[in-house]
Length: 273
Image 1: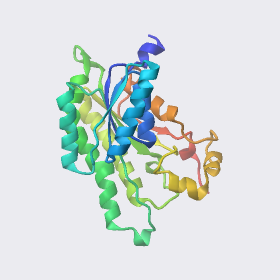
Image 2: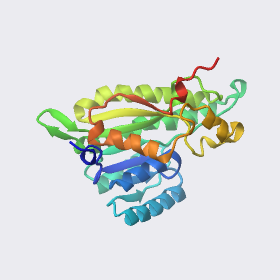
Image 3: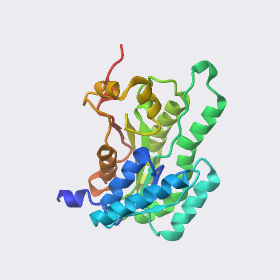
């Protein structure tokens, strides 16, 4: 038992939704640098293609053996989820890790919060997570390694949640916080339902990371203020997001199931009085 074995994901096949930028890009880079084959999917073809090209160059320079494949898809649409699942199924016999990172946010005052905001955010952040999981479970089952009746290396589903589902947010993003809270509980529900099929489900409740979604808040309050408000005195780094996913996807995390891990430096623990 050593760290190289415990955290090894070399040769694993991974799908990261929203993997072209932000936290998804950080996660994709971590897996590819560690020798995994990563499918990157999001609505923006240019983001997916650019990320795949850059990450393949990185893998080559590191001689990691990892690789990136771009398959753009609008994952708010059921038909696009099916197209993505079919595309991966046509290329792979197994999917070791599914990272649900694609998401949308909508901020507006309570009195004017639009119905369209709920439809957009709940559909992408919650409903289609279930849709895509449902479609890819056969490949995740095929990746599970058993010794007798015991699952020793399960397929993994990792949900990228939010600390806004653990506390009342400081901004008026009603649909987002509700959707992420639903995602956290969906993950627990799936953890029980899918474990007998050789699949674990866990959630990372992410705090502030540099991303397009966080930019409006960073612009309004200032990055320095956000850093000072965190017990660790900083915001999340790429290695934080990648490291947590590598832990959950490797032998080190094989017995973790149904967990919600706050990945936020402890900021969600602070009381506001």
